[in-house]
Image (cartoon, rainbow, N blue to C red; front, side, top):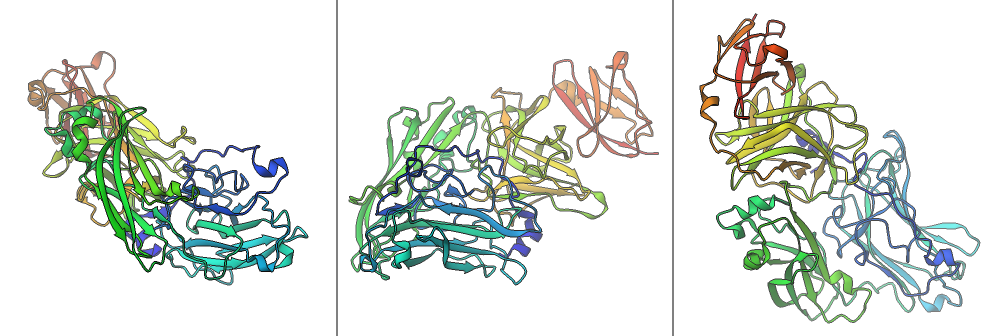
Length: 604
């Protein structure tokens, strides 16, 4: 899918900032700080570290690159380093009108002194243009979009060795091998560096590197390795969600049915054979921090030479009885390969893991944003909404909504967060509750904001949670996790008061309902059922039939436009003559603490 098509269909944009990225922490103990060079062989496939800045034992701790396993598409091994066009703190380098240098990755000094051309020193690496978000911009005479490798010579000058201009298409990972045989590079403080050139305002012009190896006694044909590595991110422990409340999991008729019958990864074989490579594998699940490792998967086979993205899958439900505690917990599941590899540098890529939190919220996203998404613009200023479907195992209450705005784009923008009951497989016409919210300029560590409702919202069966805003041309961008998705027909879009399931949407909007875990009545109270408004439609004076304690009027976006105050609270007659004609929702607080919401039409 091209960027133009993707933007029209989904309003998906590259990230202009990544508030979830932590500021880098320098490591003053690395080799360069001690004034010494590191020795051959040099190898890094980035599998030995968690997401973040590159390993300070190999790389300068500056440059803005991000070690991760979520931006690449079909990487050679678990984790790559991505030149995403953002600084190390997740902020942009400049504005969208500038195409210039962005990220760099620079090796520490490497001692090549005493070597000659006959030492046959070569550097090999895999690279990819673009990312899971899409293709980079095409390079042109007025727009530089490129990826370059440079060597530091014995005069302290950087020399361009290899460069790739963007064609405007995302590529598969390709391997390059470059000779380091010229005398000017064979010195005690040799370095190499990669740098990207592209748009300075977002992550569109991304590049990724993996599996870098610099060593002697190689040749231009030395592009294979006796290594089998995990690759794709491990899929969710849960069947429908990335996370769900512990009490809701425990309330399922069969909790094991909430777990995934197909969770796994893919693997790659770097050996060219000709014989296949025999391996074994096992999958385990563990309650953190110190629970026993329970095996849910075991297997073996011979992997064909040069095979790529071979799936390894297992059924986590087989260990559910021993794994699930019924209370809040963090579960790590992982897959480990048995490859008989003896090189300690490549052994870390033989395993891959993922942690699932069973706490008090539902999530379809894994907590990381690869792109931004916003509601589409409409003519006439009509309001629009996004909403997710959530299926409960027992009645509950929504305490708040946790959301991930992309800052500074979203700062100062007004939205409305709402909860809806189910009505014939779609969100109901009127929300159960709404709260207006203005996005602040900053977010806590991790990027999520928590927006509470004035009081918990009772829900049962299927409900929906989402946000909306008036279509005024200034749209709030929210994080979009492109490595996760809700089930089919679980994501809805409202335009001009009509709901429809979004069938062509890729990814998971980073918006999470937080539950209280308190069981609520599954049916409305009798007092709520007996409440009526008349006349309806009304020209301004509305009578409430039935007992209540307080009235609030919401507009179609869920914003509070009128509240009952003082001695008037609980009185049967409401003067709404100052409100413009239109459709409203009256929220009535009842003596038993519950809420009733009634649709009201005002005419003039």
